[in-house]
Image 1: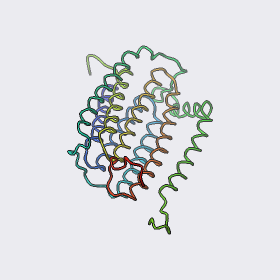
Image 2: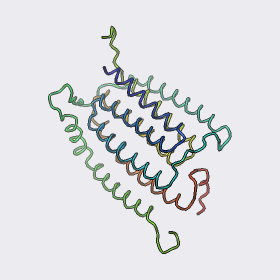
Image 3: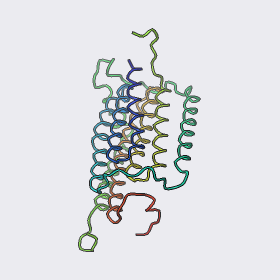
Image 4: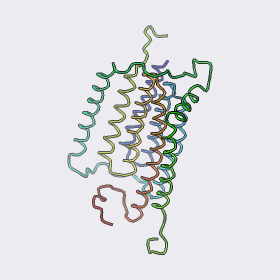
Length: 179
Length: 106
């Protein structure tokens, strides 16, 4: 069963990712990105990371992709670009070679390092087989709010800075001729 | 149902995320639309998130999922700031092509 889920979600992930880089239309690329994000969310569920799967759907597929679509519509760039023109001669070809080399190197690293994956922590609660249905959320909350509580507080500062900075960046300066 | 039940090992997930990361990297190299380049960066971030969750499960440690939580927050902030920069650049110029922005002249 996990094999079936893995194969289906891998197909979703790869088709979506290839769609992002090959579709001419930016809106189509954004929708392909949604497919990839849902595939990754399915893989999170099958690896007993249920809370992260929910956050993935809400934050990534819900908020970030909508933000992309907003900006595409706001800038009025929702038209297909011509992918036949190659800005730098031979750059795509070299990029393909670099990509294949990166796949090869990362795969070799993963396969040769797979012995290093041995049990280390206290165990991850599985809500499917365990009796507590909220085990994953409780365990994650225990980790974030005890071990990483300082990083969590810093995160709130980061979000405030990002919001204020974006408001300053995207503000229309009226009265200076910028319109 | 099947004679031989094959269960995907962590290596399968890691190889998938390696492929996903490489697709994102090639997209950043090839595409010239800054919005699509941003989407490719999101692909790479998702590949890294998948790696974290997989390794966390293989090591039976919840810290992998905690780190993914923080990566998601940082990714959201990064997208907001990046899109703000793109909007404020594109308001002054027409056309979306990062090659036109190679000079830092206003």
